[in-house]
Amino acid sequence: MPLYDSLGSSQFYSLPKMSSVPSTDDLRYLMSEAKKRLGKPVELPFEHPTNRQNFIVKLVVSVGNRVPPTWTLLRGDGPGAKMLWSRGCEDVMILQNQIKVDSVYTDSSHEERPSETSHMSSPGGNQEPMMGGAPAMWGGSTIATGPEATEGDPFGALAQPPSFMQKALPPQPVAVQKATDQFQQVEEPVLQSPAGILLPPPIKLDTASLDHVQASLTDPSTGLMTFPAFLYFLFREYARYQRNYSPVAVLVFEAAMLMGKDMVALPPQAVGPVAQRINSVCLGLEIATYLGGGEFSMMLPSTDGDGALAFAASLDAALKNGPIFQGNERVLVVMGAASIPETCEEPLVLIAAAKQAKEMAKGGSSPCVLFPVPDDDFSM
Image (cartoon, rainbow, N blue to C red; front, side, top):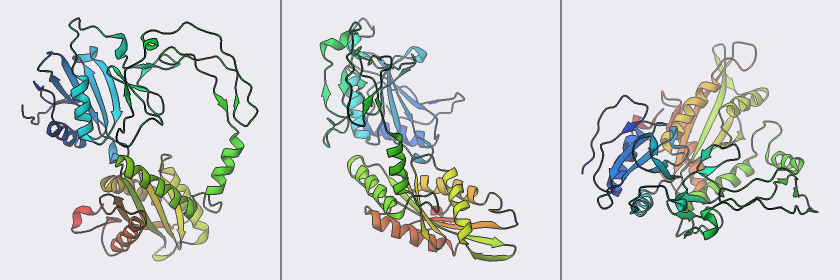
């Protein structure tokens, strides 16, 4: 059944219902539709041809592609549909195989089975899918998202849930062991895991040691990361790309001051205020550093070329938002962007490409240029 575009007025966008399990081409089409509606869910309902059960594939692509697309599989129709799993992933083939497996549901009672717990209870009572290092439930299987995950199985090893997960264990006393090192346990109310297993109290961290680590990575004169720390995190993101094919982008930009009608180099006393404006648009994942001579660089994890241009637009607006001091001066900036894997697949070449794109921006009308620049479509 071919997919085609249809208009809707609701908060989410729903494609026509299919009478078969979506193929990889269907999921790619769903991805293209979601990219037209960034930040909003796009649904693809389908009926399994064998068991006649209804399912919904929901996809949300974040603005700027700064996080992997979020895929959700639900069984049923309407608000009563049961979520089987929700996962961030960019590999359509892996998702299609998982949908094919988890849509084979033959229980004629149509009741939710205990082994198919798809939501995890948080301490506050909200129902949320478990993410991060905890196991996430995919249909009737437990997905290990911790160290058991392997390169051949990016979602972790599949295993049937053990028998003790069918019902919660009764409360049992927990012996709190007194630690002698810096990771000391805190005697707080004991929580239960989603499977009913009693959890140990959280460890107590020495926040002063964490502050010391951050201070060792930060240039005190700017509040930004040192260049060696910038390179360290860039190579870490490159390792993430090699494992998960998650993109990474780099911005290199040069700032100057417009004093009345004269453009001058960025004075040393303006570097700190400019760095503060750079930090104001960061969400905690971006890494910024000062290269010297009014030149800065930023690393944007999980961001492709289009996302880098979108971030550059926000950064440009923040830097030009009024005078740096209390006079009539303002900041002028030119930016260059490059990304892995669109531009290259080598971190140091990535920085060089972004610097070259910045030089190209000096001769154009756009404040940011994406490398390579075959035409004006790559400008902000």
